[in-house]
Image (cartoon, rainbow, N blue to C red; front, top):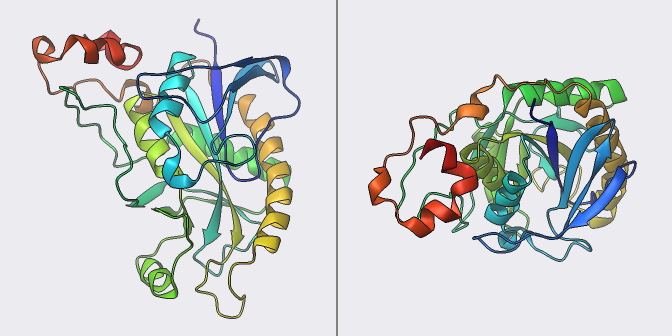
Length: 286
């Protein structure tokens, strides 16, 4: 039986995971560069955890500069099967209040020029991404957050913008007309790459503000955001502790075999360096 290993990518406010046992720190490098920071490896409720701060310790990496390819590739190197992306977001709907938790199930991409695929340098693959979030993991996260007693919304669309600036009012009005639920700057590249790496991925998104569309609520206040971040981080940590206890022994979801029948390039045409670089991801299909 393959050991269950869960990756946690901490966003704004979540830079460490208390309660880990048998802790060690591991520094990795990948063919796509270095991850955001060293990994903290330990056990939580008996389950092996690989924790990585998305923006680096001290929050020194801006959203556009996060090396998501290296982060997800390193997770694959460590044998991670599930990854939980924790993220601070803005609410785009009146019903999602600051302090609420959202477990989104869809994305819209408004980033610019971020590397979001492992398939380049002589290899082509077209992975299905119609349902970008692992349904099993998102259900577990939803139940786990409810157990903590937080106000949680299941489903919804996360629009991922480039940042690091917040939206203009015109942009906020446009995004709301599209029916989006929350707005952030990081999780979509992770979800794309996790699917290519056959890693289950889901997001715990905590709303810190109403972006700038809500005239009565006022513009985004960093002070208020930080207050809600501290509160929501505690909820996220408790929810993750709950979630790891409910993960199945065997994955039966779409993520586990996402690369089956999607590699278009003939094996003999794939450059040897590309085969070597992508061995953790595509090795079983070559």
